[in-house]
Amino acid sequence: MQLKHILLFLTPLVTVYAAEPTVLTAKRVYHTVIDQSPFLVERTSTVVWTQSPSITEAQPTTPPTPTLN
View 1 (cartoon, rainbow, N blue to C red):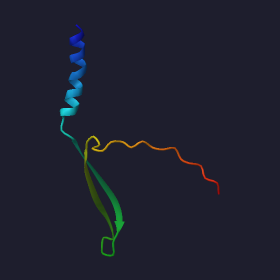
View 2: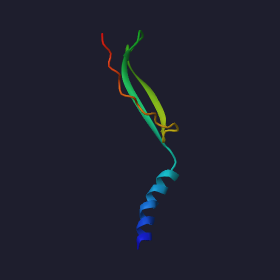
View 3: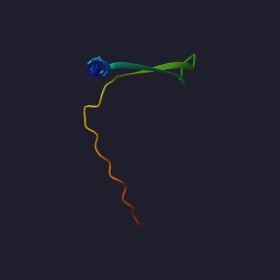
View 4: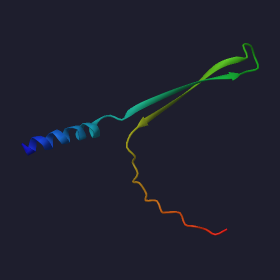
């Protein structure tokens, strides 16, 4: 019975680590003015990034040291 609970707990963890990284795309549409007709146009920019775990270890932060001015 306990082995069944352990396997049910570990199955989602293995699935998460074995999954492919998620590719995200963001598209930004904005208005801009140009010096030729029609003068007001829409421009777009696209950003693509891959969501994945960090490959570096987190560094501990040190508390700020007070200074006297």
